[in-house]
Image: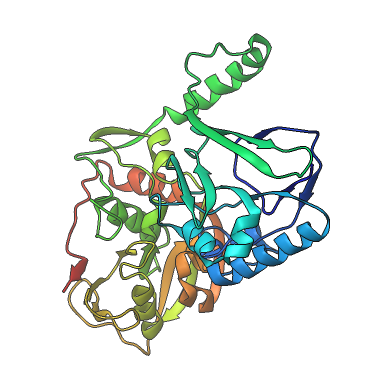
Length: 374
C-alpha cells in the first residue's frame, strides 16, 4: 500500500492501520491570499493560486500518483473551514471533478482554529483545533489486496499540558532563562488611565490602533502620518501600570518601523486599501478620513484631512511611518511598496511604544473620530 501526501500539513497527527506505508509528496499550493499575511521572505519560491487553479494542480497530482500505482491518497492543506460547508478548503474540494474527489480518501484542514469534521464533495474532511491546542487522530483501514480504504474513523481532541509534569532535566535548563525573561518582561514601562481596547471588530477605529499608530508617528519628529494594520494588534491592555510583557502581547511579531515618502494621492490610496477590507480597517495617526461603506472597493474614501480639517494635497509629498509587514505589501497594502526613500529603521514597534510611554505616561487613548463611516 502506498500513501501519498498531496500537500504539506500544519501540526496534526494522522495515523494509518494497514500494511507498511511508503510516503510520496506532490505540492499543491495554497489558494487565496496566503502571500498577503506574512513577510515576503517567508514565502519565497511558493506560488499562491485561487481554488480553481489549485484544483487543477491537485487533479494533476492525483493523476501522477495514480500512474505510480498509488491507491490511497490523503490531501493535507494549510487551508481551512469556517463552517462545515464554508471556507477556502471547501472551495477547493468543491472545485474538484467527481473523478478526482473520488480518489481522495481523506482531507486534513488547517489554518482556521475550529474543530470540524464533515464531508465535502464526497471527501472526508477533518480539521482539528489550531495553534497547538488540538489534534486529529485518524485511522484509515486499507484493504491490503486492492489498496482501497474500506473504513474511515477520525476523532479530534484538545491538547492540555497544564497537568503534565515537566521533564526534570529540561526544566533545569529552561528555568533560569525563564526567570531572566520574566524579570525583563515584568518591568513597568508606563501607565494607562483607562483600558486600551482593539474595538468590537477589526473594522473600526480603536483605542489601541490610535495608541500604537501615535507611538509610531511620534518616534521620528518629521513623520506626518502613520499606518498600522488592525490585524497586527493582538491583545488589549488593562487600566493601570503597563508592563513590557503587555506591550509584547499587543505586538508579538517583532515588526519593525519603516518610513517612506508618499504623495497625498498615494496616502488616499493606502486608505482605500484599508477601508474595511477582508483584513480589517487601517489604523491611522496624523490625519482624519471617511469612507462610504456602500461604495465598491477602490471608490470608498470620501475625504482625507489633517486633524484641523485641512484637506491633504494630492500632489504634496508626505513622510509616513508604518510596519515592515505593511511596507512589503502585507494585507494587500500594495501602494506602500511604491513609496520613495523607503527605510527600514530596524526599530522594533515595541520600542516605539515604550518610547511613547516614556514621554507621555500616564496615557489615556480614546476613539477620537479619526475615522468616519458614512
